[in-house]
Length: 262
Image (tube, rainbow, N blue to C red; front, side, top):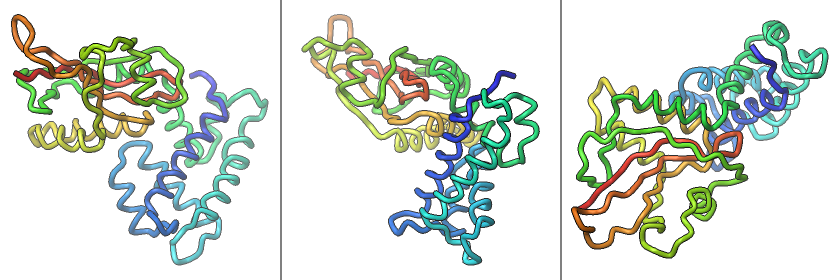
């Protein structure tokens, strides 16, 4: 197994800290009940990292009330960076397999999450397509049947994904209706509809796909490209749909499908 940079492991801890902060809401204080709710939304190593890191924060002196503040989280982050990450990189050139094996459980969980989150956008896109196997895109009142999800990857390097940077990445520079972004939607609501549209046996698969994409991509949205103008010769136009976000390497990754209206 290749070495992993300390910065990637620290980023995993920072992601977990962000989840704990988000769970607390507007008052900036995260209770045990709130963290339980947040953990219930997560799966796999990400769920375990947030759970164990919250307990780590409590052990650092957050108090018997089990309510942590942003100050508590920042203090625990500093300890984690120094004692759970840097202290194990004995040769200061990234964490080797042996160094990772010597880390406590919390550190190893952060490494596992870091490896998942530091995969290239191309690798993530292929992973998402595999997770979407047997799921059907049947949303936005499309008239296409049995439309499957395919991987999508644009090898760019962006700091943020916006409508403007998305159009540039897809080379949508024309003024015609086919180059316009007809709709941008919230991915969380899209995933909720995706889960509802499938059988109970496939709901878990849809939830796993949503979790994988939401935990590894930033600026995650649904884009429908092309204005719905009058029917073209031979039938109504087909519009590409992209469920994409920004991968850790700055590229655009996710899934693509198609939608058609008469």
